[in-house]
Image (cartoon, rainbow, N blue to C red; front, top):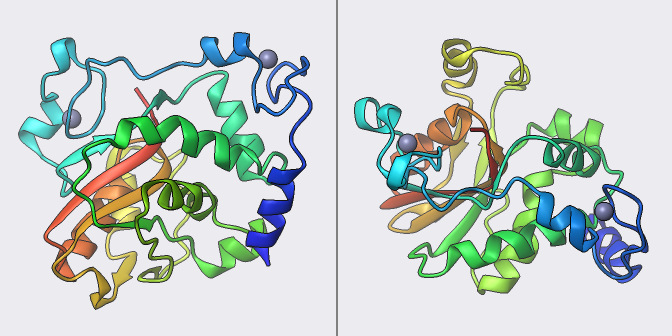
Length: 227
Ligand SMILES: [Zn+2]
Ligand SMILES: [Zn+2]
């Protein structure tokens, strides 16, 4: 039913730029706002997408590497993108799912991933929000790439407090053991998908869970990376 709802929103093409309100028939953003988005610099850590000089591996990944082998992202999380993602997350501009998927797709060329697994939300959180924002963006992405989307393979066991507002150590503790994953990932190269990577603690924990369930390799795909 949600799928139908999203499709019907997409078919009613937006008439105005979601950021400045200028006329933008059939496009989420006007050309000016699109150009002004904080695009991820080409020089970034291959493993976690943090901007680094000459695209070297960052200090965090050198000393305490995450369980995912690489991260693919297209934007940096900051103004005005943060506002746009909030509009989308709280259901105001759900057609932005398609926009985000379209922007990320060119960064996924040559992926070895065989399936996409979106970051699960706890059922209570889905109940409050009405949808899982990661699933809504991953759906058009999976269609575009011709990859299967595994929506219920991973589950969030605990309704953990939101990671926002917690420091790095608190995030790690908050998320530890939060996920389970079934055997459908066994023997597969898996792309985990989330809208934003902040410290990467949630994606790292999900990657560990998916590897423990038998996946052979895990990548992280996100729309935006917090610098
Ligand atoms: Zn605009
Ligand atoms: Zn890194």
